Length: 254
Ligand SMILES: NC(=O)c1ccc[n+]([C@@H]2O[C@H](COP(=O)([O-])OP(=O)(O)OC[C@H]3O[C@@H](n4cnc5c(N)ncnc54)[C@H](O)[C@@H]3O)[C@@H](O)[C@H]2O)c1
Image (tube, rainbow, N blue to C red; front, side, top):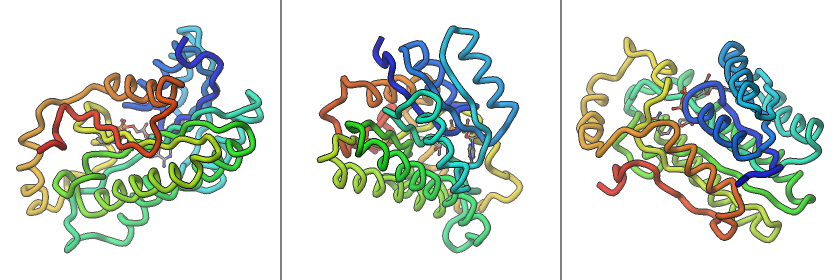
């Protein structure tokens, strides 16, 4: 088993990529602690993994709230005695607002989930991993983390921030055996659309981004991202640190 006995925290595991990771990781022997803001989705993923014989505990909460975020790392330590892998997966989209039309409320919402949450969780994970032989942190970034053409100003800035957090964490804690890598996800068939409000789209900016969306070489499935995350979580990637690994069908090569 590729993750035999590894203890893994995954945020936003009730849908999309996080759910695919939970399912795949459990089949590879991981013991899971999953976080999710939506109780019904959380119940679904816990039931699904348990029905398949996996080991999982679920915690409802908001990664943008410090206590909720830190509790996930503590739950892994309390439940299974350790933490080997953290996947900062939970994320929300903006409404394709160009900077001319951004709002403070949208900024706080998107940066809270996409940037503050991963910083708090990474901090808690690193404090444990430093003293216990290291670990692997995986941040789910985006084509919007390496380019400016796929989303609004807030989401784009938030995913660029995730790339910076990834590189800084990798460099700072490499001597402690802690790896931190980012998945540059392309267009993936998930429920992330539910975090947007089409009635509030910045239509002019959206039309501009649509020119880049039109050249997407192919849409991915959540399992395609889970496959890459599995590799980055496992010891097979033990010398990969601070990397931005694209799973995007070649989109960001444009
Ligand atoms: N779908 C895409 O095309 C795409 C592309 C690039 C990057 N991403 C990124 O991939 C990650 C996963 O997104 P997805 O597409 O699977 O979306 P999704 O909406 O299908 O799944 C995300 C899950 O996170 C949960 N969540 C949202 N806010 C939360 C919070 N504050 N605390 C805890 N849980 C929360 C949601 O309820 C949902 O179950 C995100 O970081 C997203 O930005 C998505």
